[in-house]
Length: 97
Image 1: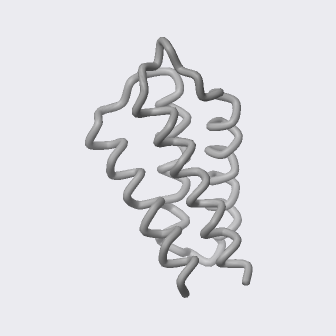
Image 2: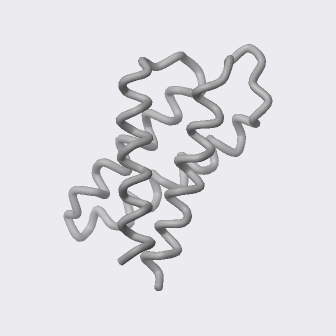
């Protein structure tokens, strides 16, 4: 049950990252505070599960850092797509398992 909750949370992070990253940064209508909070959640969750030496936790931490960096600078579209695809596939697999 807990992995389904984490899957839904990953889906929310992916959605917020998509909304914040794929629209014009100068006219951003999506609050950066929400994305920052969700990125910090992703990093904390990754650190919590890093004890078990889970590879996905390391990627969670990296994705959280990339999301935080994307709040201040424009990251390449390919990097944003990789982060988004990782979060989406992780969320979908967590929800259906």
